[in-house]
Length: 527
Ligand code: BG6
Image 1 (tube, rainbow, N blue to C red):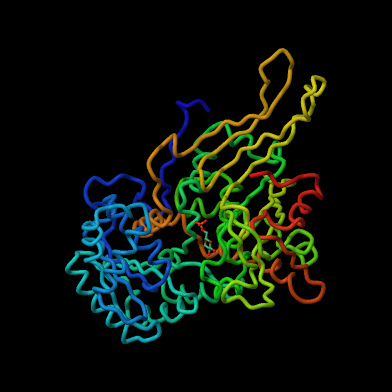
Image 2 (tube, helix red, strand yellow):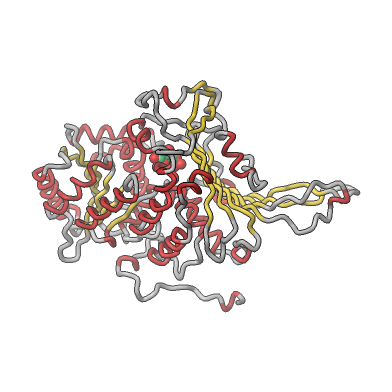
């Protein structure tokens, strides 16, 4: 098809009215065009609210993507006045987020509009109090009664909050107003508990009104995987088992637990990172082109990828996964303690802080192409990267001139830091000999676009307000991801359980992770 024939894909008839709101357009006046609504954050004393949510909302206001008719209410158990909450949030803003250098006066003006409700998550009277406040706010800020609830509490509180939102009538949509909910991870700790939670969510909100957040999907570089694949003509024809040898996904962190031992020690890296962020990355890399760039069309394709991965039997899970835990070591020049010596971790904890595995997608595009994944805490450095490793050329034409064996071309998505995309290939070294050396073509966000990209939470909060769900996980996606994860975790206990390996903090994980690839003559790429 030549460019004159390229059709623009518009929305299909079945898109819901909410999906027709286009969140990608620029707004010309303060917050105009973004649905007015109140934003209620449950868990307002928590770390996520301080580090991410309030800075993201502030940034949206600074960018004029949210305006005066987007009041914010924090709800939490701690006793605190509006003023205390405001001054805490004002301090938070000077520390975190893109606009932390903004004028103190501007930050204080934003904070002065915040409200705080002290309430329990399981007391209906407290929700009635919140309802009364929201009724007043609807009139004062002309929100039309729209409310976005953000569940940013420990998961144990999700159930009571949802129940009380229902009982108090806070979840009811009357007239033309809407009520939506953003749910933070973890969505369950296995398939059954995720199903139970989804049932509770659906008792109060229909799926259309539920936004399960995975902040990786809000990252510019992650969204750019789709732009790269489906906005260009040259890559997609090369995106299959005809040309690709294998795919490597690395999500490495140098940090340890960051004070979250209570959660992490019962979860482990597999639940924390693999079930959510990494499977999301994998589906974006592997999905078929969607019928339109819209919520349901994109999510349908992602679900098809998950359906094409066969859950492992116990023996296959043991064979294809490596789990490990860090011992003491040196990270960024600093000595760090072993995982079991971290505060809040039990001495004999067997929780995995590293996992690597091989997955296969049994469909026409990917059959025979292994996807190797590794993720861990206290690794050598913080880097998230996806490498598409191509097959070698069929003939080693240049070996006769003393060149090394043919290289594999690689398309590398650098998700973070140093965001960009690179293509490695070989090139003739200048001189009389026909000698080839590997070189790299590189695109860097920083140099091509300048400025700072929006934070993931900015994009996701804005999308939820506009009813655009493409970048949120649907119920079936979550369900299928647990279907794949459960057998891995189960293979780590009971008789003949897969061993727990160890690695020194500051390395790239245990040797066994290299061995996983070495079995087929492959190796992890040096990062
Ligand atoms: C969170 C995990 O979802 O993602 C954390 O719970 C992890 O353990 C974090 O550190 C990583 O996010 P990012 O954006 O820093 O890569």
